[in-house]
Length: 180
Image (cartoon, rainbow, N blue to C red; front, side, top):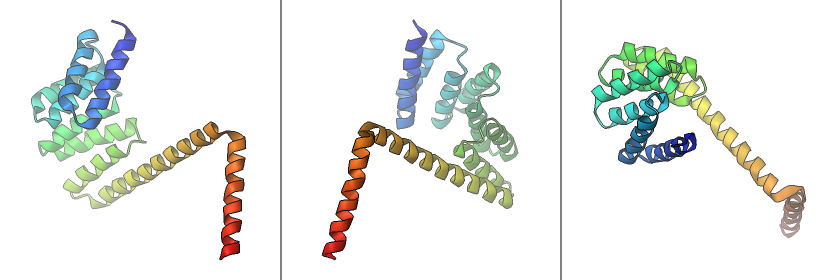
């Protein structure tokens, strides 16, 4: 089986995961692991699914394996933090969330996790700062996506179409001002 088919399986698994279809996602991630037993990302996703479905022992094992294979995998640190958090180990969870943030400081979800752990620990100033950082990153992501969509739309229309659109808007504005 080719590397491309592994990539295709991961893409489909991620789509199922995002849609909340954990059964299908898990089956696909497990197929990837049959082909490539050292695929850290697939182990991490298996762990995340197991944690969300209540199998914390299997989740911890899968995430632990992911971190053995790739200690720089931020999502695995965050997922392990979630397991620790669910067990009431807020200090341990905070440590894993801090590692995730250090590895991927642009991810707002990791700051949301920090917020929750700090809040449980009564460290409200840090909780508020983490919350604000998460919202700031959310806003940046929305702006970036809007810019990307605008650029894509203007490229598809071409310069002539964009100029035509601008003229049309000016004309409509002129007509509205005459009639008002």
